[in-house]
Image (cartoon, rainbow, N blue to C red):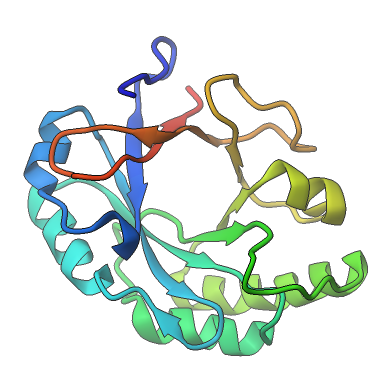
Length: 198
């Protein structure tokens, strides 16, 4: 599947993790990626095994780069922020950090919405103090419907929906993961393809 949105989405890019395997970032850039988001951390104690390698390699291409954290409902917010902040360097020209909010098979905890949102606020404040920029919230439709994050937290939204522009966030999305299985040059496995609202 090589589909990607056309006009008016002129700024398009990719997000990857170690699960995507080794990446030839020069080939990715030649195939149309204008930016890259790289998973850095998961929960309170997991670091992506390819983050440092990808961070350096994307920087070498000149593409803008940003770091992502996959938030866990089973872990303490402060510990998660510390995990991210000690893994990701503060770089002035980096894209805003992103926090990925979705349900995960490895965590069955379902805190009350108010509890989750307060924990998330704590996480955001700590990461924003480290990076110096507001965090981008990448959120699935089921998670937002359950927790009302986009209605409650005034941050830019990165929505997730294949092929059709999403309408579920309570605020206008800034970024959209439009294809979760796009084949591109430089990566053996299909990857997430993202576009920026013009």
